[in-house]
Amino acid sequence: MSNPPKPSILCVDDDADLRDWMEAVLTGHGWEVVTVDGGRRALEEAQKRPTDVILLDVTMPDLDGYEVCAKFQELKITASTPVIFATSLGGAKASARSTTRWQTCARTSSTAVQPG
Image 1 (tube, rainbow, N blue to C red):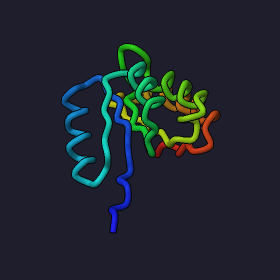
Image 2: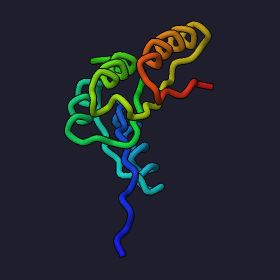
Image 3: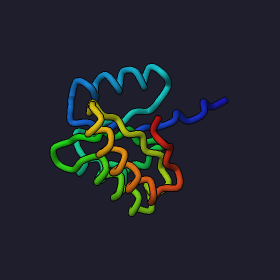
């Protein structure tokens, strides 16, 4: 009897320590994990190897998470892949800006989940 395939996740973050932590935790919970260090690399990797879920940092130096999400929605291979945003942004101003940017990305996605 063969084992069912593991669910797969693409983790995108410019912080190497955080990528290592996400990989260790998610692998330990049975996920197949692919990590990349920025938005452009995420777009390249997602086209080479589709995943079940994308965990996406909001603040990255090359492309921010909202720009990457919008590009994912334009690509047939990732258009229906759920995206989970991760951020260390804090405060009311950052929250309002993030919510507005998230809503812009979510309008193009049928799989978006409203942030709590």
